[in-house]
Length: 248
Ligand code: PEP
Image 1 (cartoon, protein in one colour):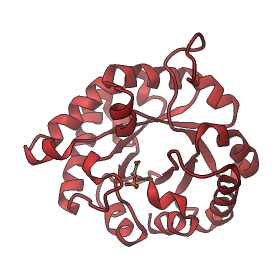
Image 2: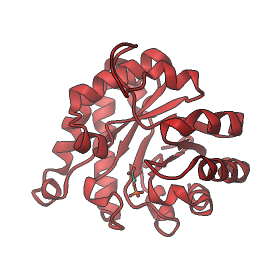
Image 3: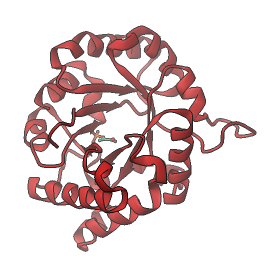
Image 4: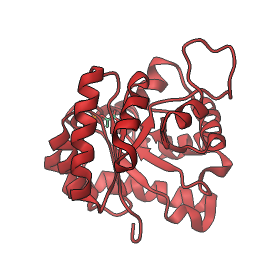
């Protein structure tokens, strides 16, 4: 999208050790200046977020992979948005398909988390995407726009929220939709954002995620309304993550 700086976000999921997180974050930070056209973000597992944030300083953005909807309270094992902010995060991934599948997060829960993120001053990255059965049934666009309607809170556009389109069947599989299919869904997301939020919806970043690699990043990131990428597996190798950023 013209005038929009692409965001290349690394979702480390539940991988690595403290030492590996430090090595990866350091290598990505050291390479970030060389790919300054894009904003780089890494999202480590919770225990590694603070040390990574301290280590990279202003050289790299750091985000969480989830947060709780409540400000605080009796929620054993959960993490509040303000805690992420406090430890150095500026972004939080919400509604990832693995959270939706593993923890039964439905749109209303994702929306509540996004509201909590906004209240804490974090930028939410809200994930949407169809299953393979939904894609084959021709329902991809309807599923995605339905998820947007249910998952995005009112203040989302004013706070510069980010949408990530991640077809569930493309995550970690090495498969991606065709370029026209990616472009079609991103155009539909853009139309939905503009319809709901007006002019502000026209410049919100829409990321593509699902088996993005150095080899396919250039073609995907050149598509209209693709304003960056959410990267899983390839974000665990600094050279690959930086190569994807260089393609943006
Ligand atoms: C993800 O889970 O956000 C993702 C895009 O994973 P991968 O790049 O490994 O497909």
